[in-house]
Length: 127
Image 1 (spheres, one colour):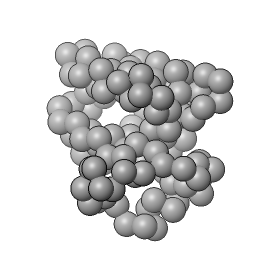
Image 2 (image 1 turned 30 degrees about the vertical axis):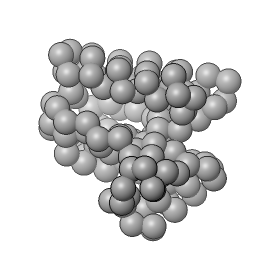
Image 3 (image 1 turned 120 degrees about the vertical axis):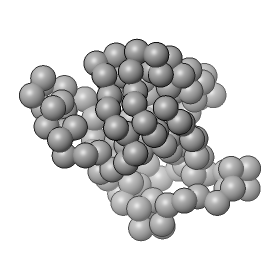
Image 4 (image 1 turned 90 degrees about the vertical axis):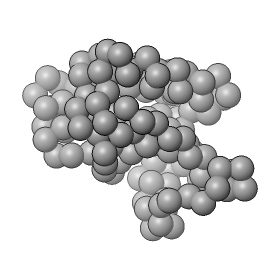
């Protein structure tokens, strides 16, 4: 699994943002987030081993008082139940005290269907 963190509010420190202004505006519109948010791009398989790295990154963002997180799922091949619980725990931390949330973008329809079958699709907003 590969992870990349992009802070939409710090262009000078994180380099060029690889998303069009239309994509960023659609995220802002759907979430109501007027200030910056972090995008985490995930590639590959998210399982019990790789979830530890993802959890460290997400917990680190929360430790920095960053609670508006967008997860780009475009290049994700598979997410195990452990991986989903990692994302759900991050969602709980972000939503606590109404500070933000975790939003999933570029999520494959079959992934959303699988989450729906087990009653977990309502935990996230999908764009």
